[in-house]
Length: 215
Image (tube, rainbow, N blue to C red):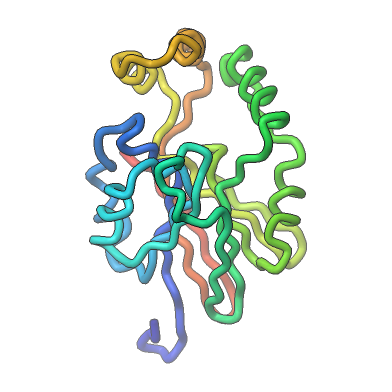
């Protein structure tokens, strides 16, 4: 987009881990207003249904990648690279092998969320898409911006978050025995995260990143 002062800018709405309709019946009603006026929407995976992408396409064109809960969206790529304003944006969900994911989930659950770290994730992300100046991922449900020299890692957080209320809703959806057992512990988490999305503005000489909580 060319602005009145002659500069150019591309504005992205960035969203991840909607888990809709897997764990949520619908996207939050505030999403269209938050993303109003964006040039494109980037979805970092764990969409779970094409209907969610259709809702987002009603706001702006969507670029999406596949997460570990997207078995019904096999047409989505695991990674995607977008070139804009002289930069390369690398999109990836961020889930690694079960050898990494399961111990992290186990320890995070047992500590009621007081310890929930992702050792080695940033190195893995930077290696996964080595050509990207900006790597944007989901999966951790934790919003952030982290810089490594001239490279940047972004995460918009998750639209779906594990809280006492969302655990109660999942328990009403007839979960498997394993998930039922996990939810009995997870619902007592001590550090529930707030749902959020991101707005990324890419200019020729800078980027601007904002995390926006969803209420």
